[in-house]
Image (cartoon, rainbow, N blue to C red; front, side, top):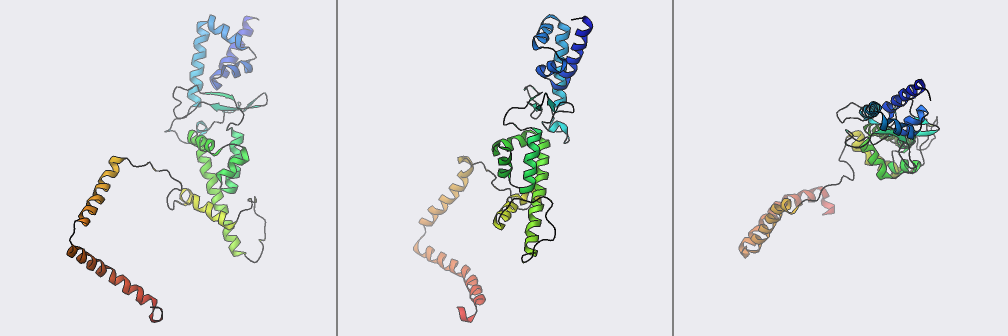
Amino acid sequence: MSAKTSQARRAAFLKALEETGNQTLSAERAKVSRSWVQLHRSTDPAFDAACKAAIATAKASLTWAPDQAWGARGSNKPPGGWGHLDGEELVVRGSGGSGGGRRVQIARARLHQWTPRVEDRFLATLAATCNVKAACAEVGLSQASAYLHRERWPGFARRWGEAIAVGYARIEEALTQNGENLFSSLGLPPEAPMPPMSVEQAIHILHMHKNEVKELGGRPGRWRRPRTLDEVRPSLLRKLAAVVHGLGLSAADKAKDRRAYAARRRPLAQHRAARAGPGRR
């Protein structure tokens, strides 16, 4: 191999390494072998330093920071030119928050892994159904992996929220139209038909997402940390003190409490009797 050819391949390899951070993909793009890379790195300190600098550059360009605005670095979609290699889909792997100590690089997608193509299919179903379980079934991945992927990639989280909003609006509109056209059919077919669902299922879906879309009520299924003994001890002591105090009351004091309770309840009983009317007392 001539020196000129070797320099050209080095430049091609380093350029690909700066973009991907992956030696294997970079070697394939530069048409060199992994052994060629290892040989030159072990015998040429300048080339080895250039490789380390290229990997650091790739990590900086592929890692997103929590204080960044939404953008391409909040997604596992590789930058332009690296979507596929030899017919295989590529993804950004190892990026989470500031990246930490993990190796951030572009790599081949594994089987049953979230990829940009899988994301698009999942979000299309989510926008049509507003149902995470159905969207996961469409792509053959678990709900746990979907929520974990959303937590790791803010770009996907943003698109998830947009899909929920679209699905919520479509189901809400379908319910309204169904009520308005109870005895007649719609004049035009829907833009993209939703899967069959009952009115109860549609109402349940709207209820589940009303906080996320309309900011109404609390978040469904929100897990709350159990309180510790130190946190509940003051409440328990107050209740125990009330029980002990009640046990120590005299018969006269108990009769006085019963009369006071009856007096507090009397206005409510009179109000209920007035609402019931003379014929229902």
